[in-house]
Length: 171
Image (cartoon, rainbow, N blue to C red):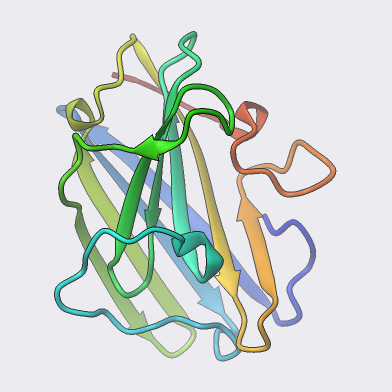
């Protein structure tokens, strides 16, 4: 759901699958997309910092009760980043264990889909269960940004807030 209503009618859905230790997350954006910055894929896609300053699809992964978590960012052009945090918004550093990301996107007028897949073991998370927070930042051509998440548990968008990480999967 968007933090505030977008100026044009659009929806964002996500689907998560965890099979044999491989996590696949797919985001589907439908509706009025012409006002959004959705760059075409670039070759080769590479690891880049600061993706959240533009259109970016995000996943936050943790294994409670441990406080540490990973943040994965994927841009429409295929660029990606993965960070390790020791606690909410603390101890941010690059996640060196993840060296690449399997991803794919698809677009037609009024529809954009992007997905990534990775082996959970690559993220060096421990614990019996996986908790996920899924979110997206959609940058409009006018420079404004929309903040989408499964839930917005605070007065301002904060994707790092563990209360917004609602999906639980057995590992």
